[in-house]
Length: 230
Length: 230
DNA sequence: GAATTTTTTCAGAAATGCCTGAAGGGAAAC
DNA sequence: GTTTCCCTTCAGGCATTTCTGAAAAAATTC
Image 1 (cartoon, rainbow over the protein chains, first blue to last red):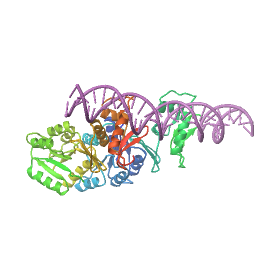
Image 2: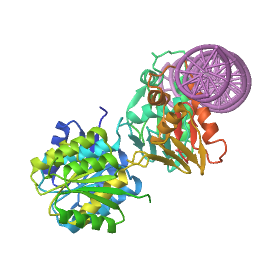
Image 3: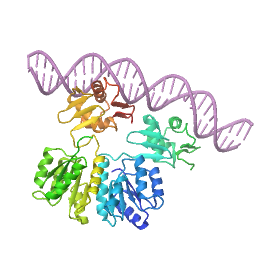
Image 4: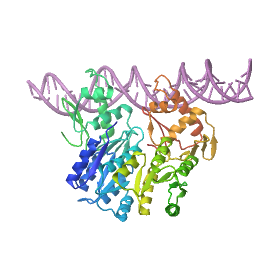
């Protein structure tokens, strides 16, 4: 099964850690964010298959964060987690765009069952709907669409595969050997400059119109993809 | 919006009637079944967009009925409704294939919110209804009739299966591997261009006489079906 | 600053992918 | 047995992508 990523936005550190541990034991990968602002940043940087959201959060509360998430992503399931169990609380949770509302204290097995309901419905088949993100660049692996700063970019198959390789290994230095193995599936052949040519193609489409370059050359070593120097 | 049908399987007549009335006031059409056996029959006869299922039922209990439904229909959302609120009860509800578990007594607005969560997520292509739609194109899966802009279109068996595959996965990019597996049930054979030929046939029948094309080629990746670019 | 190495760019050739019409073969209908 | 319809393969032509080789530019070394 593909890696399923869950974000826990919860300011009670102890609870957050227990949840993370239990989710990981259940086979998911889990990140934690301890306030609403960090949560928002992490959602912007990564793509999660599901978000567990406490309501009573520092900086940005759960209701507002939920609404913000929904402005850009209508798909990701959001499970609200909170001590407030009145009908009014629950209903406003749903109004802000949550999919479920679990009242503390709860049984972890119930939470897990509810998580599975939404994951099962999210993508019956492959859970390949992941998006790769870097700064203002976003790549949807399912539709092969690439957007930078809100503008759609058309890539050819090879360009797409190269960008995918870069984004899956962002902030890391990639040697030519590594790239040619991933994108062309062949051993490195020193007589070709195909990588350089395709890096050039990508730069024209991805970086040319932007001041903040995402594809960088490390002279003598290879390339890396990042929004800052490494 | 198309008519949304909800089935209430509940043996407490008063509660069933109140629910039915409230759901109808909320714009749904609702049927009631007062025991598990009647519920099963009604599900066999009609197609519902959502099922509300009591657990403590005469003849067939809610757990068993839920499991039976799931053998034939993995899509329809099932909300369990019951007086038992222990974690164990809830978890077994989910294990039998329920999507949600609401403990009596409950606030109707909460139930309604939960209903809406599942209806919102039910994809147009995947709904329990027997029709697939995209823009002015409509395909009836029972009668295999296809209509675009009011005009009937005759399709052969393979064409129909291909269109069905497209419509069930509308707005998504489909690879040749995926299409040939769904329509021809075989592994991809790079030596055949049967997909191209049938896409061509479909285009002639579906798109040729219309400016708004529904079948699109993504060069190097595959095809997708949508009323807009993806 | 000259020499060397590495990277970038470009034009055009080669390869691949896509579309279309035509035609053969097989199954079902008559 | 014949006809009709459907499914499939094949071949061509066209469009796009991929790759090559060489030259220009940039970075590094001496």
